[in-house]
Image (cartoon, rainbow, N blue to C red; front, side, top):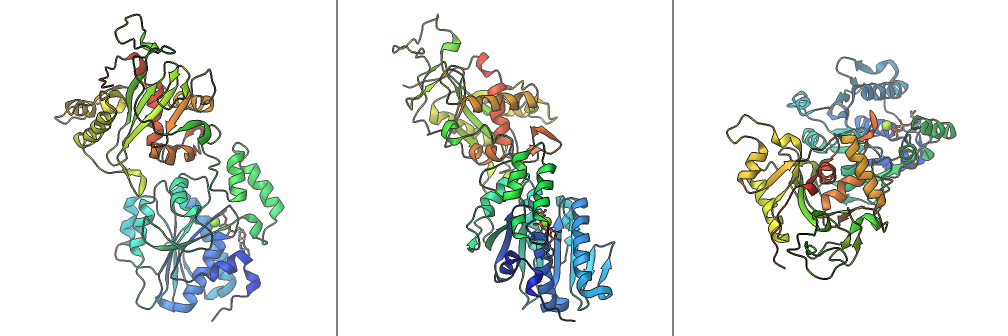
Amino acid sequence: MAVEQRPDQLSEWQSQAMTVPESIDLFLGGGRGGGKSFLLAALFLRHCEQHGDQARCLVVRKSFPGLQDLEAEFRQYFTSIYGTALRFDAQKHKFTLPNGSTIQLDQLEREADFSKYQGKSFSYIAVDEAGQFASPALVDRLRSSLRPPAGVPGRFIVLANPGGVGHAWLVRRYALNEPWKPYTDAATGFDFVSINSTYRDNQFIDRERYAKNLMASCATDPELGRAWLNGDWSVLRGAYFSTVIDEQRNMIEPWPHLPNRYRKAGANTLAHHDPRLAMTDRWEFYLAHDFGVAAPSVTYLVAKSPGAEGPDGYHYPRGSYILVDEETTTHPDDLNTGLGLTVPDQADRILSMCQHWNVTPRGVADDAIFNRTGSQEGSIADEFRKAGVYFEKARKGSRLAGWQTMRRLLADAGKPDVPGLYVSRNCRIWWETVPSLPRDPRNPEDVDSSAPDHGADACRYALTGNAGHVHIPVTFSH
Ligand SMILES: Nc1ncnc2c1ncn2[C@@H]1O[C@H](COP(=O)(O)OP(=O)(O)OP(=O)(O)O)[C@@H](O)[C@H]1O
Ligand SMILES: [Mg+2]
């Protein structure tokens, strides 16, 4: 039974999306309730009708309850078309259409789930609610199962809403690209088009009520509610630090060199050997490090101000922190994956950063790297020490207290008389990740730790690490 798609069955946005050539992959973004999942069913239907038993569709979600909702929607949709001729295998979550084409729904949560796809090929693959994946690794891996038979087009479709743990990678790859205009996704090399809808594009719902309910469901997080309503990916609403980070106040241009450590605040003579000059009257420089091998390491060179002018001519109130430079092992395509470098290799990279700025490689790091590993080398901190990088425990206190300190310092940047947190433009990972870090859905006062929070963690250690009380010798050439 061939099915005519009556134009009034789809919204205008959905109809227009159907006209995008099949050779181009789709990113369906925007806000909630715009009709993305329904459009997916329509795209599957067309593909199945055209290619019969050659058509094999797969749609995955990360969570099982989410999958059940989608299954119910699909069931209703395809039953309304095929009635009892539609077959459904509840065990395999698989629909078989009368012409032999199939649509399978599946949960994809972790690497091990891929064994299910061993030797299986699909012609259409969709990832629904892709924002629930903290990193694109699984999504990219899934693509390798896209192997349509000769003559059948293959297509990959990514659907997502703003504000999830995957917000940052979706923004980098897809969400902010000009709508309807094809581009090549630099990370994967495939041609994509990004198209956005909001509930306003969907005449099949009671829009006024939908908006009201959506805002009510986000009562404790109205910014997320607005992002879901308006499909706003650019202003990273719903993010943990969104209300306290402002590039105008927090971002500084890269320093040409460090300030002279021994110049007393306000004085224009060097006080190099003046014993009366307290530690707190000097600039302090130290490292702050968050360790990872499979996950990225991030290391900051931190400057703490005695209340003095920086080399950029700006006055930094006493107690202000400046992230001057960043060294990271973050994978270029994935903010949550490390380069897999050994400790000596990581130490080498940190040493070159320290050489560049002419500072001694000392600082604070995550307490966990001081744990004995059972290997001959001792702890990771021991290994770093052997390679010439000296870390002390950040004694980080509670995570939540650390985040509070970080929020306060960020909010106070730019005020003339209280300490603030300033971050150089060249701290790329910080600027790519921290502004968009989502809240933990189970505890809105915490950062979602499945998001790429490595830069944020290292930054937190910089502020709470007590490094200011540790004597950190600095060699100086100027
Ligand atoms: N063309 C259509 N005909 C009938 N109902 C539709 C149509 N498009 C969407 N709907 C209905 O509108 C509601 C929202 O659509 P859908 O679930 O596809 O939106 P979505 O963008 O996937 O939302 P979310 O962001 O919450 O996942 C659903 O109940 C869906 O069945
Ligand atoms: Mg949906």
